[in-house]
Length: 82
Image 1 (spheres, rainbow, N blue to C red):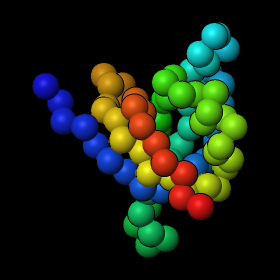
Image 2 (cartoon, helix red, strand yellow):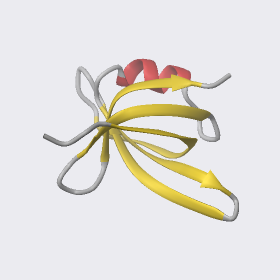
Image 3 (tube, rainbow, N blue to C red):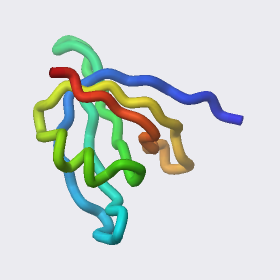
Image 4 (spheres, one colour):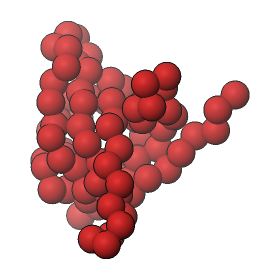
């Protein structure tokens, strides 16, 4: 079983992929510092309406989730840094 990962970074490119009762949201998380940045593609369905309400592009957040077959992080929990 794959181990969960925890990442901290800033949010970019928030997009609604599927608009349903619980929407599927895709966003890019930029992790690291200016000299060495990595971009992770992320998906969130659990708490996605709260995510849309709380998070805007440029926000710093911490996410916890697992990688799927497409190497995207499927977010299970998140925390917005104020």
